[in-house]
Amino acid sequence: MPSLKSVKLSMDDDEKRFPDIRMRHRDEAAQAIRALSLPALTSVDLDFFLRRQRNERAQPPVLHNTGVPDPLSSSIFELSLNLVDLTVEGVFDGSLLRPIERLSTTSWPNMKFLEINLCITTPSGGWYFTKHDEVPFQPLYMPQSQIKTTHSDLHLEKFNFLKEAGYAYLDPVHVFRSKADDAELTPFIEAYAEALSMMPKLKSAALTVQLEDHIEGEPGWFCIAYFSPCKSAHDHPPRLICPRCNRGVTRQLVTSLLGWEPNEKLADKLRRTGAKFCTEPMVEKTMDEFRSYHGVEDDPN
Image (cartoon, rainbow, N blue to C red; front, side, top):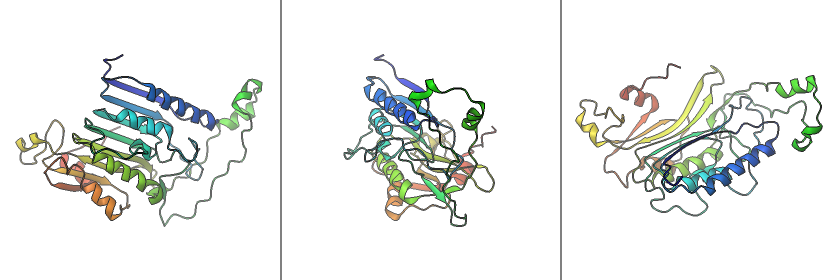
């Protein structure tokens, strides 16, 4: 399909009983992405679906070999270089945005819209978030029974109601991870900030992570978003917001950091997003301030 311009793919990445199968499926997806030859492709939406892990005491599975970047993340990076619009959701590491080699000054010459919905777990078996100081110590969860049957032996397995009920048993809910873990999340955000600085046509970008409040049980959002200025916004006083794209007359850095603060060097990188390509000043807003001023309504659903 040499003329194909847009791809939207949703893939189940939620295999729990056999982590080795999940790893193999991710490797196969990475190989398939690398093998694509679609010269006209400009828009990609990839959703690697998994149910949110609500037992945050448990150890997440390791999804790639040690000592190497996540193959799925790095394959999407290679695919993204000539895109205009990229939306991804799933478990990724920094190689989604940062290759082993250094980026060129404009690694994404055409990218205008970037959206990354990052899961709370890392492909290397860790967590991007940890507990707040006031949350009591949370011991590592150890399941009472281990499934010993391998995938290759499934044809020998006889049906057993109690065993099947055990497979279907819901893990306990322990939700407490709502504070960014500097060691895990900062490198990803650094890669995000560096990537945005290499996108001369960028209009908007967002990095979001959905969390769950351990007290209220309501979803919470960690978010770092950028909006470039829109020339048409000058034609719409007094708020100076373009009704079509909802962007204003300045560069905007919009955040919901849930108490986390980037180090000074990283904060400066984020503030300089778009500065090489736009002369307009940067205005920083919280997500609540942005939604209030821009008239963004909450999703009724």
